Length: 88
Image (cartoon, rainbow, N blue to C red):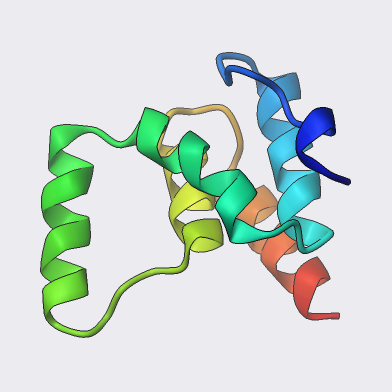
């Protein structure tokens, strides 16, 4: 999967599932980063800054999975399944 297969905007479950597939397939984090930026709320940004400052920064993949779950587009179990598939 490459950038041309990714949705332009993520507002529906089907689009979020495409991103989960990209995570599972190991798509480069640079291609996923714009989605993290688009989904980042001021509260998310504060939490990410604290984690970055303490040396506990999340990867782009993990941040994207968490934000998609927080938005109600996927379940946490689906996000963890994508992370596990990437490690396999």
